[in-house]
View 1 (tube, rainbow, N blue to C red):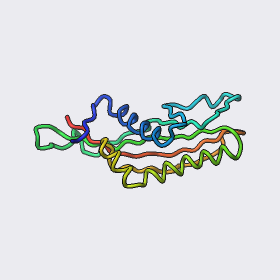
View 2: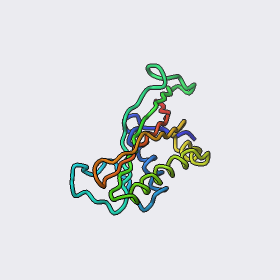
View 3: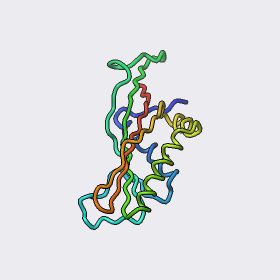
Length: 154
């Protein structure tokens, strides 16, 4: 059975699937839909924060999509999400941030993970490392981008 995404909520439902997947990989870390205030000079985290945000979408099909043969139409969208990993501290925080990014990249390349997410409606998943840097003394950030294609029927 194909997953049917609600046209008005497809970004939120896709974000929920990705958040649930990340939370299953890192049950002891907070997975949020926004970063903490980085301008706070007293920012101190006991555990890394993994943040997920929607970046953009592109139609894969021209205009209204394709006829699906059952009296409806199918529309495919390519979605792009940003994943940020934020840590505070010194060298151990940098290593922890990098371990999280490597674990995500490795697990997302496994066939079993891709099949699991495909059963939930996410196809053609690609996770790309973007960059990692020090925001300021003791605050470290890593960015990844996740691309996926979803199919909506209407």
